Length: 315
Image 1: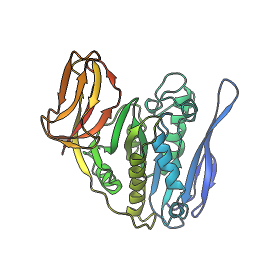
Image 2 (image 1 turned 135 degrees about the horizontal axis):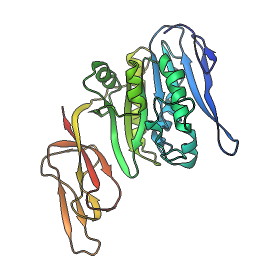
Image 3 (image 1 turned 90 degrees about the vertical axis):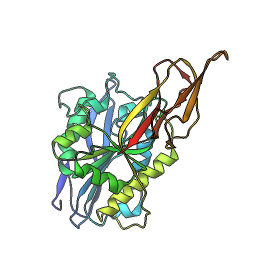
Image 4 (image 1 turned 45 degrees about the vertical axis):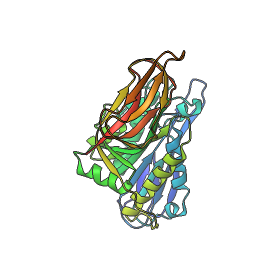
């Protein structure tokens, strides 16, 4: 895409870098909230990549990944194509350190949005109308939910070869087959022929530098693969996981993890132990299959039925 394009009425010509405000949203206090969008354009035609984060206000790792990417000189002087970066989509929830919007809604269930809808729906509408038509593909950055630590992974739909190709170029340690969910940016973008992959790494409200470094390197590998930047960065071996499932607690108590995140385990291996706080019971948790650990619940106090260890089985 080598022609001039614009976001919210602001044009960006080939060879220009600009910060643009996606839109302005007013809070009950008459305070205005603005969502910055960063655009880097080369004079040389090429693909347009979208990097977005902060869909949930407590997911800080993705925000740091994009900050590190757009701070690099290689990106500021992009060789070909275009980069659109939205470091924080959900500004309001970010300010409060919360996952959900003030009305309790999940921002990533508001797509495709409505220009006359709720705050989340309006933001989703602006992204779908102003940004998605300009991009060719993208990566949306997330972390695990409350107390869930996800090992660095990229999620895509294996049935679509373009999804897998982008994931292989990104080369996160784990590539997971993940179907679309209603109301998400990924699903709505796919309807317009724009593959958006989801990167997961670490847990909410906590910097995980392994996840940050893996995500940053993945972005740079992806841009290098499309000749958007020139950079000597090593390839990263990836494992494709076709199916995932959670090992759940059989009893309530205190959960002690016995394995590290990302580890390969064999069927029957000890994953952890649930202890009664009074020293009366000890329940061993073993792996039901050969698999990789893709996520761990770090909550020590757990109830019967809680998700403990997320396992992924190879393709």
